Image (cartoon, rainbow, N blue to C red; front, side, top):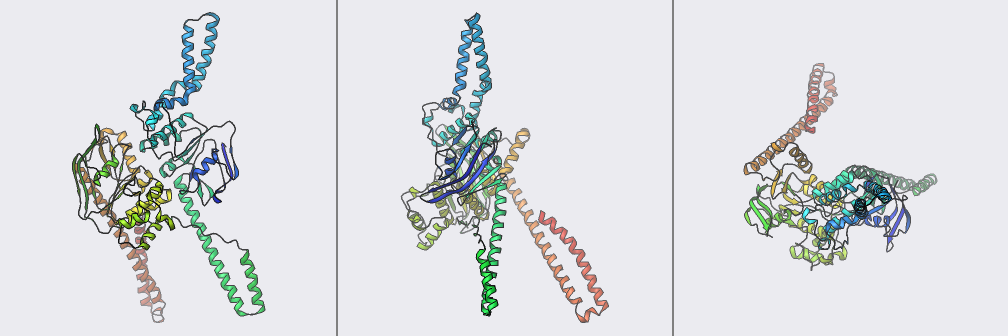
Length: 636
């Protein structure tokens, strides 16, 4: 065991954040800490690192073990280049290398005892160099930088000229190169694109030490975590397995707790009714029995009602009107900023009801495409056509659709003047803004709060075509699941940019990958996309080159294939309904036959009994066939 956390308590201004939190981490274990925003995840990490003092409890790290911590916000400031900054982590190896080179130079001009002494020193230095993996340290450093999304041309850039997200990647790279016995990462994927996240997953999976991760990236947690530590209502519960295992077990546990609560409540109500009835008899014995039951009832430890799953934020997306079948047509659009050519001759179309995700590395132009569609940027060339009755609702990851100088109440009332004060307050309450919160300035809101307000405006828009730019950014896992459910129930069309692979798996029916300035379409979710990418890597000559835009005929073929799949699915559903109706009809008839055969005038009529019995036998035979047919249809 490398880390033991025992009975941690922590309060702020007498409000408890953590109570009796305990868990342990084994030497090579990969654990994740999950919970809603404000559950105390970062607070717990800071207590583990000694940056905060717990009110009660202890944190014990095994002797002579090292810990590396990546917080969400990094204050990396240096005049070093990116390469020099990461190289500073390997200062000991650089110094060993310098001493080895110095020793080699001296050996060239030395002899006798001096040479023997230098040879011994040289042997010791090279042995230490090998133990530190010195011959590979520069290639390892380059691999980490490229894995985290830095190109060769970035290596010479000064650290103090980088953005906050780039500095966080530098801090992560330095931490990985230090190779501590325990790595603690707070939202490590926030500033990484998909390629970098995939690289980090592989790195951590092969890491020989222990890892603790706080992340809202459920796909990342599915691949990395072998233990989930959930913080909920100030307490910690430990689950074995990855995120999907945890979610399934959590739901089973919640259901069991809810059933236990409901059973106990029913028993309490029953006992109270019996007690009242016994008292109403107004006899000495009945009153004593009532008092005895009351004492038993008082001794019951009343269970708390479990919180309803995802019962906080209310998001319901419903189009005001239905659009035409052709929602969007994009033909040969291109965009460049000076010498930077983002993409050329992109073409694609969207049909009503499609949910399409645009994916690709950072800086390829995904957000630019959405801005062009929303007329916030003009394309350099190409044509964009919206279909009949298309109404766009736009979710901007930077929340430029919000007005920082306004209050939340003003933001909604100015945009939707027909809403009453009560309707506005109810809408904001559905997104967790209550009381005086509605009079806060938007400029004072956190990223998560701005995200919820943008979703509230999106819901009120009643648009039939949603364009979303990184809609899950700053949302906790519960809010992401609420958004997923709302999008899956939404009857309109959705086009979004996201790097949240779990979210894409849940909500996308088609993927457009932006790579090397072109788009490639994949008819399926993220897992399907990965499968096709692997096939392309194995059989590159037989597949369309990655990055090539689908031709018009291919787009039509995709649309035809989708229609055929939808038609086949509808036929299966119709067949299933017909089968269920036939089963119900025969079962009803058999019940009628049983009643008839019991009637006095029929049970003595042998001929009539034989006739009914024969009919029932035929029905039973047909039912057996229908039951088998129903099983096959329901599986399909």
